[in-house]
Length: 358
Ligand code: ADP
Image (cartoon, rainbow, N blue to C red):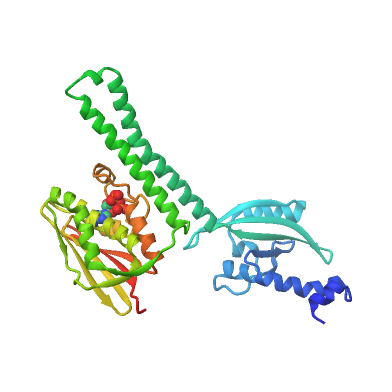
């Protein structure tokens, strides 16, 4: 008879049968559990606790709690449980290489007439990280929206205060209002787009796409901007190159990269789109002759709102969300986007996609 059957049928004493079951449950728990005796010596712990706290120092049992975790609040909580029979909840932060944070519930327990205390450690590192990301995102969004809004309000007030009749300036003020409103519009579009992609809201419809033709189309759309900057657009993708991707999303990714390559270029520079097939990956590269990106920024430019020069990006109409959108779309295709740069000379952004035969 299995332990569980015995337990439920009541044929053996609950006490006797439940012990090994509970021991198995403790083993599989993700939460760390530590039980200490009167002198805060560890009497029992589960596998999760061993993985979290032992750090090559062998079993936790028989060690003093202070040898395993050095934290005043934790010790005080265990002391209170042992000496005063009081439960408590604390937050514990371990300054290890990868900072970990726990919500710990400490309570008194009694077994075989011995008094002890149990600590259950819930790892909240990931929840905390997500919360931080959420707060940062909110504060970035508010900041990015507030800047153009402040400008709009200021110019509306100026117009109201009489500038509306100032024939020389009123149109210029209206233009500034329009530009800032457009910036807010653009930002909101990008935020919605990013959250839509991140929530898994889009379904890709991948098919064979003629890459050469797609690049031609993108170049046509961006030709006005490129002309303004006197930037030359070069399509070096061989004519009959096909990649397997969602055509709309691929266009969106490459438009973003080519647009940046034009925006962050030097006057009379160039943007070259190339193609290579390596093993089972198709690599589309967008190379510019711009200012490049220094090593400290390279790691971070795919993060939301990260810009090497915030004021300049804003001036040229950036939201700081474009590369984050590209990253998500590339991943959604089972691919990746990467960047290599030679500061002062230019950058190459590469979108890698699984080739169709893969
Ligand atoms: P933005 O809307 O500012 O262009 P992105 O997410 O597209 O936002 O880009 C983030 C930042 O990465 C840019 O503000 C810029 O600092 C940097 N960046 C992107 N592309 C290039 C490039 N081709 N050359 C130099 N810097 C670039």
